[in-house]
Length: 116
Image (tube, rainbow, N blue to C red; front, side, top):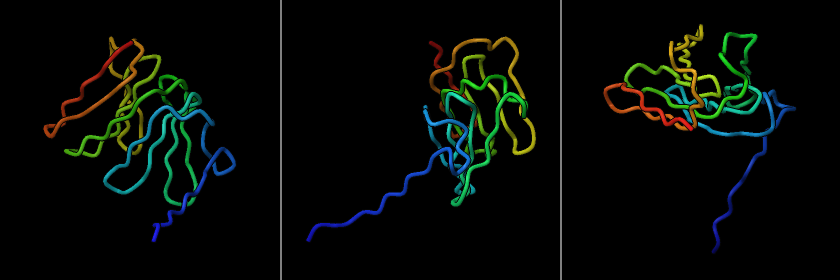
């Protein structure tokens, strides 16, 4: 007997910041974070909350995400470098004005970035 899977589709009508998704990651609170070409969005299981330059993000052109398991901080790679979100405010890393296409963290909370 074949197993059946249910798939739900969510888009801008649910609050997603833009339809072109570039990366996704889940945090320890089971929220799904999504980068798009129009900012980032957080899905709580029902709807999205979206963030962009007007909320303090350094660029709406968001490309990659990583969550530190050590302190649950969200790191965002964009066309303008790396930002960090602590749940309240965005912080930008100085001298990181590069196109950050991939991010990763290790068990110590160290962030690794791939530019280009």
